[in-house]
Image (tube, rainbow, N blue to C red):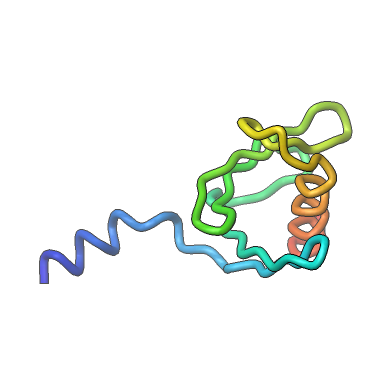
Length: 86
């Protein structure tokens, strides 16, 4: 019983799993923040099981620790903003 409780308490914030297709590849995205606002400048996410952070610089979104596709980061924000009507 205690193992089950510990596992639930150590899980990431329970959030809806978003499915996103970008350039023909499917991704799973989980928002690791309880609330989302159009004024946010940092956004922690779980992208295909890997902790990532999106950072807003000016009007564009970027991955904090990756030199990944900037358009992909912007597409993630666009999908989240449409879902939460921001």
